[in-house]
Image (cartoon, rainbow, N blue to C red):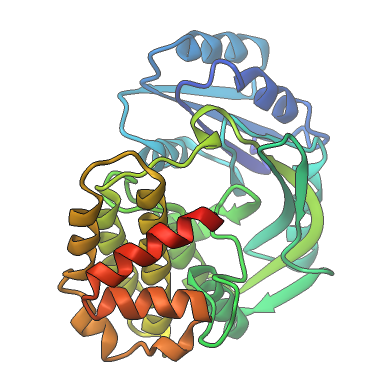
Length: 339
């Protein structure tokens, strides 16, 4: 009976330009004992036929056609049919090094690790690539330290300049499927919360006993189409709030976790307002006022001090949380020229 070592779940939606590049990097992996699960998320282009054509070419490929529900639920559909010892998630407009899964699987078995994370390259707008290494050497985290990794994925500790220490995305790692199944871990919908990867990471790492980070770079995160330009979305404000509430609930038994969740929330709102300042919307002042009047500030201010943040972020937080919408408006209009 064919029991794959890794199930690679690949959601596909409007990626006909990039899908072949992605799949060529997957089917040519040096680790041959894998299954490749393509989720056609109701794509309106040629993706459904491309998925079926690839299935005819490689017996390791499974195809699931479903109605469009977004990335999180597409990944869940892949988990429903996965049979591998480990699971990986690859975005269909990215690609990977052909030795990625062999390296990560060998590391997982050697270390008896529940998850292994690698470095990645991030494409820049000018076409160059930045190396992103979260560790400088192979690092093993036991259970008591895995919680700290999880917190550092949410946001950095107070008085730390960087927003977070570890990338929250699931695409540069492999996960033991047994833990996912036993704990019924699923992705939320990005139509309900932003950053649907983060709740998955929190649930998984809360149940992991050992994880490994390696500096070797195997994943290539590409800027494609809409990825090239960030677009302001006013509905994101409510999605940020939903994410905050979900993470507070999931981490309520972890000391000081709420400080991390609140820093994440503050950072997301700050980024949102900077996108607003650069947008062509005519209701900018009203949206700034709406953010300053959010009812969550009363709760956050009892636990989160401005001094926890670097100066620029501190000023943003103070203006937002103390309802200084006019000053905040002038500030973001000034600051946008430096973005």
